[in-house]
Image (tube, rainbow, N blue to C red; front, side):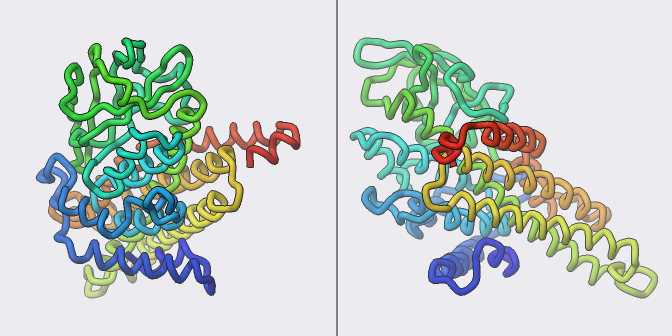
Length: 399
């Protein structure tokens, strides 16, 4: 992970930032000890379970879990440091989806026996779980509400029956899916284990080689113990998880940007044409500077959003604004830097075997996931206008 990137998520001369700097060093060492990922076309379909268990041992899956529940009691900046390192190394494990969003969602629910059991399984690396709530359209520019959920839950004695299809699930190899369903106008979160009768997992290969999924639930009967939460608590927990995921995903995109820029500058300094490095040509130097500007702007946006989200007493509206500002900038910059990096490399930039190709493909996937730049720009403008127009009493609660 480039030093400039790590510095982007810390502020100098504070005890907290010394801890984050130490964490960044651990992340760099951990990803450096692992062999590089294969090209997207040859990548294995599911997450590397050996790596996932290693992440659990390092405590990365429990960063956002409070100490009373067996976690580290950290916040989004710590998770962003890990995501930044994984982006810089182009790791394809669903850290944000399973190691950030799921723990954040579970800790927002009441501390029941099913929630406590699943949370323990998740942070210890025994169960790989992801959220499933999106329709085929995959829209992410609004808050999640019950009416938008594509899965319906009906009472069945002490349990539930689920029917519907949910798309854009981050992996088809999860051990458990946290399905958000609508039940009498409210949201209910339900655990559906892999292999449950009536659930079909349809894989979808993404550009970076990862395998996503569509879940088809045809009268899936579940006991009451599968219900993790419902009502307002479930809605707020789900929205908090989605916003936190978008914010930390922006940090992973920043890691991709850092490495794509590093590869491009190295190539421009070593590739020679007409007896000198092509990086000495003025036109290419100007384009390289444009990429550097995009990296610095993204770094500043992610840093600012993290500081805002980690402030004391932050409310859901402030978290949503921070997430949208960071994700909008990072998604736009990652696609722009990737496109320019390929052009500056020439023919070699198009090959799967060259390192740059993996970063560009990963950027294509993450830039769209949880809302692309346009969606988050719209949402930021709408939320900002709503907060500005709200009464002062509401603004104090929301922020």
